Image (cartoon, rainbow, N blue to C red; front, top):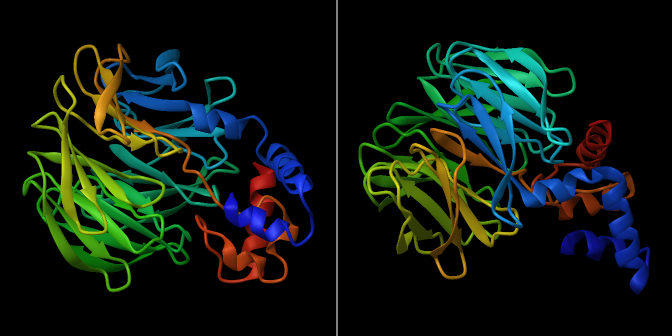
Length: 371
Protein backbone atom coordinates (compact mmCIF):
# COMPACT_ATOMS: atom_id res chain seq x y z
CA UNK A 1 0.00 0.00 0.00
CA UNK A 2 2.96 2.32 0.67
CA UNK A 3 4.06 2.04 -2.94
CA UNK A 4 0.58 2.93 -4.16
CA UNK A 5 0.43 5.98 -1.89
CA UNK A 6 3.82 7.21 -3.08
CA UNK A 7 2.75 7.00 -6.70
CA UNK A 8 -0.65 8.60 -6.05
CA UNK A 9 0.89 11.51 -4.15
CA UNK A 10 2.12 12.96 -7.44
CA UNK A 11 -1.51 13.65 -8.30
CA UNK A 12 -3.19 14.15 -4.95
CA UNK A 13 -2.26 16.02 -1.79
CA UNK A 14 -2.79 15.59 1.94
CA UNK A 15 -5.84 13.75 3.16
CA UNK A 16 -7.12 13.32 -0.37
CA UNK A 17 -4.50 10.63 -0.98
CA UNK A 18 -6.00 8.35 1.65
CA UNK A 19 -9.58 9.02 0.63
CA UNK A 20 -9.00 8.38 -3.07
CA UNK A 21 -6.87 5.29 -2.45
CA UNK A 22 -9.56 3.78 -0.22
CA UNK A 23 -12.26 4.58 -2.75
CA UNK A 24 -10.30 2.95 -5.57
CA UNK A 25 -9.75 -0.16 -3.48
CA UNK A 26 -13.44 -0.47 -2.74
CA UNK A 27 -14.39 0.02 -6.39
CA UNK A 28 -12.03 -2.69 -7.66
CA UNK A 29 -12.09 -5.22 -4.87
CA UNK A 30 -15.43 -4.51 -3.21
CA UNK A 31 -16.07 -6.40 -0.01
CA UNK A 32 -14.06 -9.39 -1.27
CA UNK A 33 -10.80 -7.75 -0.21
CA UNK A 34 -12.13 -7.48 3.32
CA UNK A 35 -13.21 -11.11 3.22
CA UNK A 36 -9.75 -12.14 2.07
CA UNK A 37 -8.21 -10.49 5.14
CA UNK A 38 -10.56 -12.04 7.70
CA UNK A 39 -11.44 -15.48 6.37
CA UNK A 40 -9.35 -18.65 6.28
CA UNK A 41 -10.40 -21.65 4.21
CA UNK A 42 -9.64 -25.19 5.39
CA UNK A 43 -9.89 -28.35 3.28
CA UNK A 44 -11.16 -31.38 5.21
CA UNK A 45 -10.10 -34.49 3.31
CA UNK A 46 -12.13 -37.04 5.27
CA UNK A 47 -15.23 -34.90 5.60
CA UNK A 48 -15.49 -33.81 1.92
CA UNK A 49 -15.97 -30.24 3.10
CA UNK A 50 -14.28 -26.86 3.35
CA UNK A 51 -14.49 -24.99 6.65
CA UNK A 52 -14.54 -21.19 6.70
CA UNK A 53 -12.84 -19.58 9.70
CA UNK A 54 -13.51 -16.00 10.76
CA UNK A 55 -10.03 -15.03 11.92
CA UNK A 56 -11.39 -12.15 14.00
CA UNK A 57 -13.02 -14.67 16.34
CA UNK A 58 -11.17 -17.86 15.32
CA UNK A 59 -14.45 -19.67 14.90
CA UNK A 60 -15.95 -21.71 12.06
CA UNK A 61 -18.66 -19.64 10.39
CA UNK A 62 -19.51 -21.91 7.45
CA UNK A 63 -19.05 -25.47 6.22
CA UNK A 64 -19.18 -26.01 2.46
CA UNK A 65 -19.75 -29.47 0.89
CA UNK A 66 -17.32 -30.16 -1.96
CA UNK A 67 -16.14 -33.32 -3.71
CA UNK A 68 -14.42 -36.46 -2.45
CA UNK A 69 -11.17 -36.10 -0.50
CA UNK A 70 -10.30 -32.42 -0.97
CA UNK A 71 -6.58 -31.97 -0.36
CA UNK A 72 -5.28 -28.45 -1.02
CA UNK A 73 -7.05 -25.24 -1.96
CA UNK A 74 -6.28 -21.72 -3.17
CA UNK A 75 -8.10 -18.39 -3.13
CA UNK A 76 -8.05 -15.85 -5.96
CA UNK A 77 -6.15 -12.61 -5.22
CA UNK A 78 -9.37 -10.61 -4.99
CA UNK A 79 -10.80 -13.07 -2.47
CA UNK A 80 -13.86 -13.82 -4.60
CA UNK A 81 -13.35 -17.54 -5.30
CA UNK A 82 -11.69 -20.58 -3.77
CA UNK A 83 -10.49 -23.48 -5.93
CA UNK A 84 -10.55 -26.91 -4.27
CA UNK A 85 -9.13 -30.04 -5.98
CA UNK A 86 -11.11 -33.17 -5.13
CA UNK A 87 -8.66 -36.05 -5.41
CA UNK A 88 -11.39 -38.69 -5.26
CA UNK A 89 -13.40 -37.19 -8.11
CA UNK A 90 -10.74 -35.89 -10.52
CA UNK A 91 -12.29 -32.45 -10.49
CA UNK A 92 -12.08 -29.03 -8.87
CA UNK A 93 -14.85 -27.32 -6.91
CA UNK A 94 -15.08 -23.55 -7.35
CA UNK A 95 -16.48 -21.77 -4.30
CA UNK A 96 -18.04 -18.31 -4.41
CA UNK A 97 -16.78 -16.82 -1.13
CA UNK A 98 -19.62 -14.27 -0.98
CA UNK A 99 -22.23 -17.04 -0.74
CA UNK A 100 -20.04 -19.95 0.42
CA UNK A 101 -21.50 -22.17 -2.27
CA UNK A 102 -19.96 -24.23 -5.08
CA UNK A 103 -20.69 -22.42 -8.33
CA UNK A 104 -18.72 -24.62 -10.75
CA UNK A 105 -17.08 -28.03 -10.98
CA UNK A 106 -14.17 -28.39 -13.39
CA UNK A 107 -12.94 -31.84 -14.59
CA UNK A 108 -9.15 -32.20 -14.42
CA UNK A 109 -6.62 -35.06 -14.36
CA UNK A 110 -6.67 -38.10 -12.11
CA UNK A 111 -6.02 -37.58 -8.38
CA UNK A 112 -5.64 -33.79 -8.28
CA UNK A 113 -4.10 -32.44 -5.08
CA UNK A 114 -2.16 -29.16 -5.32
CA UNK A 115 -3.48 -25.89 -6.73
CA UNK A 116 -2.20 -22.32 -7.06
CA UNK A 117 -3.62 -19.16 -8.63
CA UNK A 118 -1.52 -16.89 -10.85
CA UNK A 119 -0.82 -13.47 -9.28
CA UNK A 120 -3.18 -11.75 -11.72
CA UNK A 121 -5.95 -14.24 -10.89
CA UNK A 122 -6.32 -15.36 -14.50
CA UNK A 123 -5.43 -19.05 -14.14
CA UNK A 124 -5.50 -21.88 -11.60
CA UNK A 125 -2.79 -24.52 -11.96
CA UNK A 126 -3.90 -27.92 -10.64
CA UNK A 127 -1.38 -30.71 -9.92
CA UNK A 128 -2.64 -34.16 -10.94
CA UNK A 129 -0.52 -36.63 -8.98
CA UNK A 130 -1.48 -39.90 -10.62
CA UNK A 131 -1.00 -38.78 -14.24
CA UNK A 132 1.97 -36.43 -13.67
CA UNK A 133 0.36 -33.40 -15.31
CA UNK A 134 -0.80 -29.87 -14.51
CA UNK A 135 -4.27 -28.79 -15.62
CA UNK A 136 -4.48 -25.06 -16.36
CA UNK A 137 -7.92 -23.60 -15.60
CA UNK A 138 -9.01 -20.26 -17.05
CA UNK A 139 -10.73 -18.63 -14.07
CA UNK A 140 -12.91 -16.44 -16.29
CA UNK A 141 -14.56 -19.46 -17.93
CA UNK A 142 -13.69 -22.24 -15.47
CA UNK A 143 -12.50 -24.48 -18.27
CA UNK A 144 -9.19 -26.30 -18.74
CA UNK A 145 -7.26 -24.47 -21.45
CA UNK A 146 -3.96 -26.38 -21.28
CA UNK A 147 -2.43 -29.56 -19.88
CA UNK A 148 1.25 -29.61 -18.99
CA UNK A 149 2.93 -33.06 -19.13
CA UNK A 150 6.35 -34.21 -18.01
CA UNK A 151 5.96 -33.76 -14.25
CA UNK A 152 6.79 -36.47 -11.74
CA UNK A 153 3.83 -36.99 -9.39
CA UNK A 154 3.20 -33.25 -8.91
CA UNK A 155 1.64 -32.36 -5.59
CA UNK A 156 2.23 -28.67 -4.90
CA UNK A 157 2.48 -25.52 -7.03
CA UNK A 158 3.73 -21.97 -6.30
CA UNK A 159 4.25 -18.96 -8.56
CA UNK A 160 6.96 -16.35 -8.63
CA UNK A 161 5.48 -12.93 -7.75
CA UNK A 162 5.56 -11.78 -11.37
CA UNK A 163 3.75 -14.94 -12.49
CA UNK A 164 6.49 -15.81 -15.01
CA UNK A 165 7.33 -19.20 -13.50
CA UNK A 166 5.57 -21.93 -11.55
CA UNK A 167 7.57 -24.20 -9.27
CA UNK A 168 6.14 -27.70 -8.81
CA UNK A 169 7.04 -30.17 -6.06
CA UNK A 170 5.90 -33.78 -5.89
CA UNK A 171 6.48 -37.16 -4.36
CA UNK A 172 10.01 -37.17 -5.73
CA UNK A 173 13.44 -35.70 -5.12
CA UNK A 174 13.08 -32.92 -7.65
CA UNK A 175 11.29 -29.64 -8.32
CA UNK A 176 10.15 -28.76 -11.83
CA UNK A 177 10.11 -25.18 -13.13
CA UNK A 178 7.40 -24.21 -15.62
CA UNK A 179 7.57 -21.19 -17.91
CA UNK A 180 3.98 -19.93 -17.72
CA UNK A 181 4.22 -18.12 -21.06
CA UNK A 182 4.72 -21.41 -22.90
CA UNK A 183 3.48 -23.83 -20.22
CA UNK A 184 6.57 -25.97 -20.64
CA UNK A 185 9.05 -27.39 -18.14
CA UNK A 186 12.27 -25.40 -18.47
CA UNK A 187 14.32 -26.68 -15.51
CA UNK A 188 14.55 -29.51 -12.98
CA UNK A 189 16.14 -28.96 -9.57
CA UNK A 190 17.24 -31.91 -7.43
CA UNK A 191 16.28 -31.57 -3.76
CA UNK A 192 15.68 -34.02 -0.89
CA UNK A 193 13.30 -36.96 -0.79
CA UNK A 194 9.50 -36.69 -1.17
CA UNK A 195 9.14 -32.96 -1.52
CA UNK A 196 5.42 -32.22 -1.28
CA UNK A 197 5.32 -28.53 -0.43
CA UNK A 198 7.06 -25.31 -1.37
CA UNK A 199 6.81 -21.53 -0.99
CA UNK A 200 8.46 -18.60 -2.75
CA UNK A 201 9.70 -15.49 -0.99
CA UNK A 202 7.81 -12.24 -1.74
CA UNK A 203 10.80 -10.85 -3.63
CA UNK A 204 10.84 -13.96 -5.83
CA UNK A 205 14.48 -14.73 -5.07
CA UNK A 206 14.19 -18.03 -3.18
CA UNK A 207 12.05 -21.17 -3.03
CA UNK A 208 11.77 -23.11 0.24
CA UNK A 209 11.08 -26.83 -0.23
CA UNK A 210 10.39 -29.21 2.70
CA UNK A 211 11.77 -32.72 2.16
CA UNK A 212 9.71 -35.21 4.16
CA UNK A 213 12.13 -38.13 3.94
CA UNK A 214 15.23 -36.05 4.67
CA UNK A 215 13.87 -33.94 7.56
CA UNK A 216 15.23 -30.79 6.01
CA UNK A 217 14.34 -27.85 3.78
CA UNK A 218 16.08 -27.10 0.48
CA UNK A 219 16.52 -23.46 -0.53
CA UNK A 220 16.50 -22.86 -4.29
CA UNK A 221 17.81 -19.69 -5.91
CA UNK A 222 15.38 -18.71 -8.67
CA UNK A 223 18.18 -16.85 -10.46
CA UNK A 224 20.16 -20.05 -11.07
CA UNK A 225 17.63 -22.79 -10.24
CA UNK A 226 20.16 -24.44 -7.97
CA UNK A 227 20.01 -25.43 -4.29
CA UNK A 228 21.93 -22.82 -2.30
CA UNK A 229 21.14 -24.05 1.21
CA UNK A 230 19.82 -26.99 3.24
CA UNK A 231 18.22 -26.46 6.66
CA UNK A 232 17.57 -29.24 9.19
CA UNK A 233 14.08 -29.03 10.72
CA UNK A 234 11.76 -31.47 12.54
CA UNK A 235 10.59 -34.92 11.50
CA UNK A 236 8.43 -35.23 8.41
CA UNK A 237 8.31 -31.61 7.20
CA UNK A 238 5.40 -31.06 4.84
CA UNK A 239 4.01 -27.55 4.53
CA UNK A 240 5.83 -24.22 4.38
CA UNK A 241 4.60 -20.63 4.38
CA UNK A 242 6.52 -17.36 4.32
CA UNK A 243 5.59 -14.13 6.08
CA UNK A 244 4.57 -11.21 3.82
CA UNK A 245 7.76 -9.32 4.67
CA UNK A 246 9.84 -12.36 3.68
CA UNK A 247 11.66 -12.49 7.01
CA UNK A 248 10.55 -15.93 8.19
CA UNK A 249 9.51 -19.29 6.78
CA UNK A 250 7.23 -21.47 8.91
CA UNK A 251 7.54 -25.24 8.32
CA UNK A 252 5.05 -27.80 9.64
CA UNK A 253 6.59 -31.09 10.81
CA UNK A 254 3.90 -33.76 10.50
CA UNK A 255 5.66 -36.44 12.62
CA UNK A 256 6.74 -34.13 15.45
CA UNK A 257 3.49 -32.12 15.46
CA UNK A 258 5.60 -29.01 15.52
CA UNK A 259 6.44 -25.95 13.45
CA UNK A 260 10.02 -24.87 12.73
CA UNK A 261 10.65 -21.14 12.25
CA UNK A 262 13.41 -20.29 9.77
CA UNK A 263 14.99 -16.82 9.58
CA UNK A 264 15.42 -16.35 5.84
CA UNK A 265 18.30 -13.90 6.26
CA UNK A 266 20.51 -16.60 7.80
CA UNK A 267 18.60 -19.77 6.85
CA UNK A 268 18.70 -20.98 10.45
CA UNK A 269 15.95 -22.33 12.68
CA UNK A 270 15.23 -19.72 15.36
CA UNK A 271 12.28 -21.40 17.12
CA UNK A 272 10.35 -24.67 17.30
CA UNK A 273 6.68 -24.55 18.28
CA UNK A 274 4.65 -27.53 19.50
CA UNK A 275 1.16 -27.37 18.02
CA UNK A 276 -0.49 -30.41 19.63
CA UNK A 277 -2.67 -33.11 18.12
CA UNK A 278 -1.01 -35.10 15.39
CA UNK A 279 -0.05 -34.81 11.73
CA UNK A 280 0.42 -31.05 11.30
CA UNK A 281 -0.23 -30.28 7.65
CA UNK A 282 -0.19 -27.48 5.07
CA UNK A 283 -0.12 -24.26 7.05
CA UNK A 284 -0.63 -20.65 5.91
CA UNK A 285 0.33 -17.19 7.13
CA UNK A 286 -2.54 -14.72 7.31
CA UNK A 287 -2.32 -11.67 4.98
CA UNK A 288 -1.23 -9.36 7.81
CA UNK A 289 1.68 -11.61 8.76
CA UNK A 290 0.55 -11.62 12.39
CA UNK A 291 -0.62 -15.23 12.63
CA UNK A 292 0.10 -18.68 11.20
CA UNK A 293 -2.78 -21.16 10.82
CA UNK A 294 -1.75 -24.81 11.14
CA UNK A 295 -4.28 -27.57 10.27
CA UNK A 296 -4.04 -30.66 12.45
CA UNK A 297 -5.21 -33.76 10.60
CA UNK A 298 -6.99 -35.50 13.46
CA UNK A 299 -10.45 -36.72 14.47
CA UNK A 300 -11.99 -34.21 14.64
CA UNK A 301 -9.70 -31.82 12.81
CA UNK A 302 -8.46 -28.65 14.46
CA UNK A 303 -6.43 -25.61 13.49
CA UNK A 304 -3.70 -24.20 15.74
CA UNK A 305 -3.12 -20.44 15.55
CA UNK A 306 0.45 -19.19 16.13
CA UNK A 307 1.33 -15.58 16.88
CA UNK A 308 4.36 -14.58 14.81
CA UNK A 309 5.24 -11.97 17.44
CA UNK A 310 5.72 -14.57 20.19
CA UNK A 311 5.97 -17.84 18.23
CA UNK A 312 3.44 -19.37 20.59
CA UNK A 313 0.05 -21.00 20.01
CA UNK A 314 -2.55 -18.39 20.98
CA UNK A 315 -5.75 -20.11 19.87
CA UNK A 316 -7.18 -23.40 18.64
CA UNK A 317 -10.07 -23.56 16.20
CA UNK A 318 -11.95 -26.67 17.28
CA UNK A 319 -13.43 -28.43 15.54
CA UNK A 320 -13.13 -28.06 11.81
CA UNK A 321 -13.86 -31.01 9.53
CA UNK A 322 -12.33 -34.45 9.93
CA UNK A 323 -8.97 -34.80 8.25
CA UNK A 324 -8.17 -31.09 7.98
CA UNK A 325 -5.32 -30.87 5.51
CA UNK A 326 -4.61 -27.36 4.24
CA UNK A 327 -5.35 -23.72 5.01
CA UNK A 328 -5.51 -20.94 2.42
CA UNK A 329 -5.93 -17.18 2.36
CA UNK A 330 -6.06 -14.91 -0.64
CA UNK A 331 -2.48 -13.95 -1.49
CA UNK A 332 -2.37 -10.21 -0.93
CA UNK A 333 -1.36 -8.38 -4.08
CA UNK A 334 0.51 -5.11 -4.09
CA UNK A 335 -0.41 -4.27 -7.63
CA UNK A 336 -2.27 -1.33 -9.17
CA UNK A 337 -5.96 -0.64 -8.60
CA UNK A 338 -6.43 1.54 -11.69
CA UNK A 339 -4.74 2.04 -15.06
CA UNK A 340 -3.49 5.54 -14.26
CA UNK A 341 -1.11 4.03 -11.71
CA UNK A 342 0.62 2.18 -14.57
CA UNK A 343 1.57 5.41 -16.38
CA UNK A 344 4.79 7.41 -16.18
CA UNK A 345 6.85 4.35 -15.16
CA UNK A 346 4.49 3.72 -12.25
CA UNK A 347 4.36 0.06 -13.26
CA UNK A 348 7.92 -0.35 -12.02
CA UNK A 349 6.98 0.18 -8.37
CA UNK A 350 4.65 -2.77 -7.90
CA UNK A 351 5.31 -6.17 -6.33
CA UNK A 352 3.22 -9.35 -6.34
CA UNK A 353 2.90 -9.06 -9.21
CA UNK A 354 5.78 -7.21 -10.81
CA UNK A 355 5.59 -6.02 -14.41
CA UNK A 356 8.01 -5.81 -17.33
CA UNK A 357 6.20 -2.92 -19.02
CA UNK A 358 3.17 -0.64 -18.82
CA UNK A 359 1.06 -2.93 -21.00
CA UNK A 360 1.35 -5.82 -18.52
CA UNK A 361 0.32 -3.47 -15.73
CA UNK A 362 -2.78 -2.31 -17.63
CA UNK A 363 -3.70 -5.91 -18.49
CA UNK A 364 -3.55 -6.82 -14.79
CA UNK A 365 -5.95 -4.00 -13.89
CA UNK A 366 -8.36 -4.97 -16.67
CA UNK A 367 -8.47 -8.57 -15.46
CA UNK A 368 -9.09 -7.55 -11.86
CA UNK A 369 -12.04 -5.43 -13.02
CA UNK A 370 -13.44 -8.40 -14.97
CA UNK A 371 -13.50 -10.74 -11.98
